[in-house]
Length: 217
Ligand code: E4P
Image 1 (tube, rainbow, N blue to C red):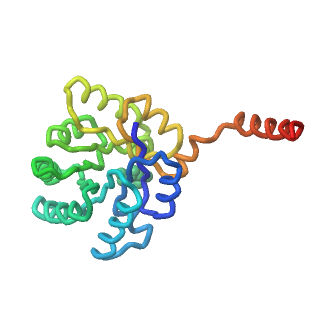
Image 2 (cartoon, rainbow, N blue to C red):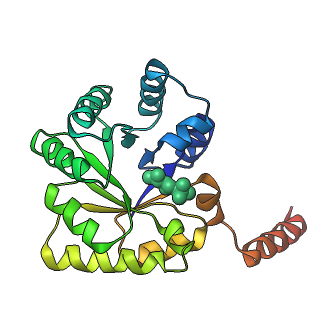
Image 3 (cartoon, helix red, strand yellow):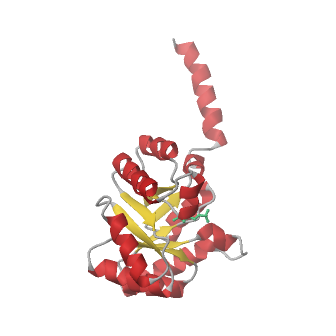
């Protein structure tokens, strides 16, 4: 399973990258706004900075919702760097645009996915990645991980090539469960990635080893 970081914050991206386990980055308009990035020039510049930091797929989301504008915006984003993946919402014009991007060699990430039916449609359109939103499904008292498993099963039976990119990750357990359920990629906040490090027995064990090591010097 590939690890992407789900943020537009450059210092968090750098920290995850320095761990040596980072395969890519996802952003969305809310994450860009959180960093105070405003205006087309600043947005394009910020994506360029991310691409220069991480050598992996970088999702940049369109904010257009009609076919012609999604194409125009997506082409502009794709021109920033070969690693840019155009992130397109799961709407009718979005599916048409994903098909066009796919036919024209531009990578896509179909976002805001909450059902297996949507997952089938995105795969048929040729999406490179599909982003089911685990945490937001959990918030509605359904199990987001069940959706990952269901889509993984369908894609395997049907031979679809679209990669399942589990999104809206809220904690380290989500990451483990996504790996078990067959996600190809997990995009996570930095805290959830660092949460994978933690186990109280590791801390107790290390403290004891370091204490005993004093007897050996
Ligand atoms: C990433 O691709 C998604 O936009 C993101 O994971 C959504 O996360 P949230 O539900 O925490 O906003």
